[in-house]
Image 1 (cartoon, rainbow, N blue to C red):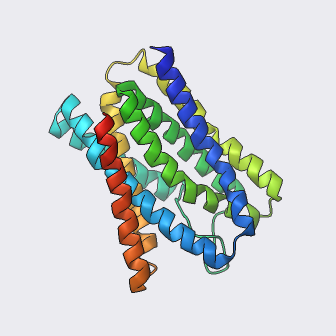
Image 2 (spheres, helix red, strand yellow):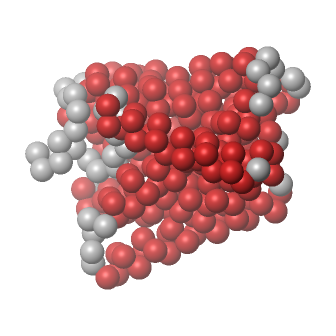
Length: 249
């Protein structure tokens, strides 16, 4: 395995981990501005996840193992992500904590988020095992989704009673699980044949689940026509950017 592959993978997951600090910029924002920003970011990331799944991961998986096998692993990804959210209480949420919208306790959120970040590291590294362009496209989709996710996580920790500095450090520590996930995948990838043929369509299923089950329903909570148009355009922009990434593959 080349040093270039290790470098791209580890730099990518470290960048994704650094996003955990973005929550601090929301402290100086008004609630109104934060909601507007999240409206666009959630829509944009939903489009990027759909685009990553349908224009990068699924075509790659189909080419490698055939339509039926690839479809089976996509469905497996959907089911596993459902189980994680249903029974492990790992929940993607991008709405600030409030009395009307409570979140799990801080520690529970950190554990669930750590597991989520570990999987992010696995899917990013697995994508790089296939090709550097695919790894870059997958990293881009994960990165976009992590921005609103980490803003929400930071708010949960503050609501749970964490001091600002402690919330940032704990959130970053949880985010570093992505590095561990990447390391495990890179090591296993040299010893287990066919791992990418499983992980790539599995990741596609996860992307589709997150976008369809967590992000899109959140967007439906806002029904104002003008804001709905913004949501639609942001989703299209997210998909379009992922389609543009196919030009470098």
